[in-house]
Structures are given as C-alpha cells and as structure tokens.
Image (cartoon, rainbow, N blue to C red; front, side):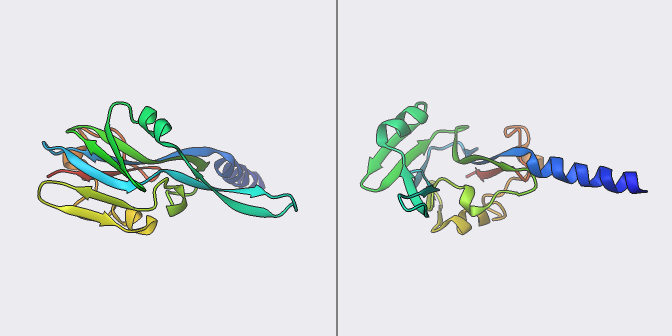
Length: 166
C-alpha cells in the first residue's frame, strides 16, 4: 500500500512538471470571408527593475513581425487595431503558450485582449479576455464534434477552437 502512495505522488510530480502547449484558434468553416478585428498581440511579463523589484512589462509585437507571422493571411492595421481577413478554411491563432499540464487555458494565456468577428450575417464581440474564453461554450462559436471533426483535427482542454460556420 505504501508503494502505491509513493507511485501516485510520483505521477502527480511528473504531471505538474510537464509542460503542455495551449492554443486558441479561430477557424473559418463558412463559405465566406470573415473579418477579425483585435488589438495587437502582446504579452505581459514580469522583469526585475534596478531595485530588484519585479514589474510588469508589456511586450507589443511590431507591424512587420505580425505581417511575417501571418504571411498567408490578409492583414490590415488601423491605429491600434489589427484587422485580419480569413478566407474559407483558414485559421488564426490568438493564443499559443506552454505551461503546466494540469492547468487548462486561462485568460492570461491569450495574446489579445479583445476580439470582434464580422461575418456576412452576424458580429461576435468579446470585450475582454474572459469573454474570449466564454466563446468556447457559446452555441454560435463552440466546437461541435459531430460536424467539425472532419475539418478540425484537435479540440481538447489545451487546444480550443472558436469556430465560425455561417
């Protein structure tokens, strides 16, 4: 019995130390071009200042890095907004990070703080990171295994899809 307890503790330690890749992807499964409007991708990191105190530092990627990253997508920029047009069967990753395997996707994993998706018939708006996370369970944008599994390979707790169908 004691060996079983030690084995369980080792499994928990291994799972906590393993890193999982977490991705959030917006996929256009409609037959029309959709437009995504968001802020520039950024990350908040903690860095030590000259006094040894950790401070938040906002890292914003510049235009040419974004254009290079999304080289197969049509990208426009207006002031502080990034506008991306997705053709049918294209996707856009709005989060991509590595973290502990026991934790699912959280708001701080996202690279964007707001998201608007414009289709021919509808507008889907998320004003903050929590609302973007809520899109995973929204009936309009939620991954449906029966219909979407042929065109989207992965959907689990580490890899979430926001699916646009109409």
